Image (cartoon, rainbow over all chains, first blue to last red; front, side):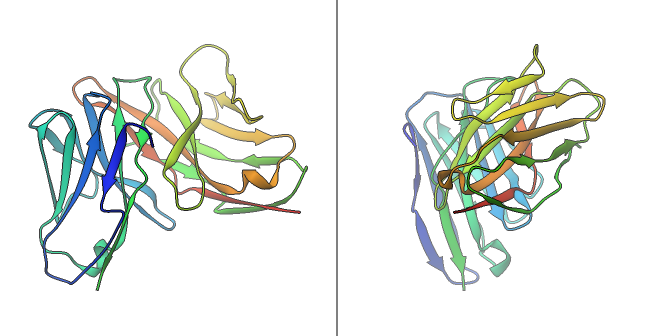
Length: 113
Length: 116
């Protein structure tokens, strides 16, 4: 989607290795989110950020950490990848509070073998 | 915590027939409601949203959704579907938090397959 880029688009990694996914935005939006998408579960929030160096946990944060050192970048790290973390990961950005929807990235398909 | 239930995981429908996708949410307070669409191998795109005012909201491509506060529902409808409407549809409700922005809680998704 215009203004938000996720990298890599696809990744295969081995169990136990650390993995970092990157979300980059050019919209200067304050809020950024990481979700994972799994069949039957919809999208579940992992972590979110409401400003540089301001982050908080979502509903499925175990095994994940995030960092936001610049407005435009939000990194998601799997500290030691497990097979249960095989999923499609989406980053989203939001301009403001309440009535604003999200703009989503195209996703990263991660496979942990 | 809020929850969103989409009652149908899959909905097969013939081209030019109507379709309804059901969504119920758990919040008892004022909410903002959204429908997103995901085409194969793509991210989610906002289809329509209810913020306030008229309970019937419409999208540019013929979808409409009606907010029913008493039934805590936000069902999505289209009177005549096209092959290009084949996609997965997600209902979402905001968790308005002044400090943290509008965290959205999503339903499990409904996969619509339009058959010729």
